[in-house]
Image (cartoon, rainbow, N blue to C red):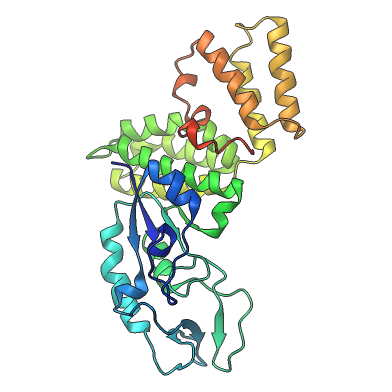
Length: 315
């Protein structure tokens, strides 16, 4: 079985949209499907709306409420039905490691969904779809991304990485979290945190150092949320360079002068934008194979997901 991931049904090709069509995403259905066990949901069909169906939109009333209404007939209000559906459905999704939602949808969009005033004008900035907003409120640690944003190689890599990471977290915890399991997990992700969010790297490090003073359940939930928030930040070139230089230091006694220069030059080329991250990591992994180090071999930063996904090629 693959990693359980939720998905808007139309994104994997199900013909459930208002016009009877779909919004099939090739990356999701052709590449991620080899690793993820997608669990499709269409909230609009879930509340009993037919396919095809009249379009619906989000409207902000004069009282400040956001309502899910018919586009042509705003007296048709589906807000209550959608909230009831969301409250019933979301608890059954607790085992998910991620979710791909359909952009711009009044039920599934993650952000910038059109929000209308009663006079028909749109409100700048928009909002989130009702179902996805409820999902984000209930499971703020869950990696969620829109189908359209997955076309961006950096957003794509970050989302897939977070899904694999959350899955790893749950697998490491097993049936029951323990302090030892949490400390071991954190140790494996130190370089990841250093790359994604140096501030969180320090804060979570202090938190783990004081784990004995925490209630275990409270620590588990607080750590999970803060950790997943930290890796939502994209690892930038500067932070990645710092990690690469940190890794370089582990080989100072193992490499000869020429090898040291080769690695240093490659790291500099990456920092300047002349080489992809993968080039430096490939050489570091090669040196690690030749000169095994027990600590480095546990570091997820070096191999965070299957290479076949080719997510680091453009970084």
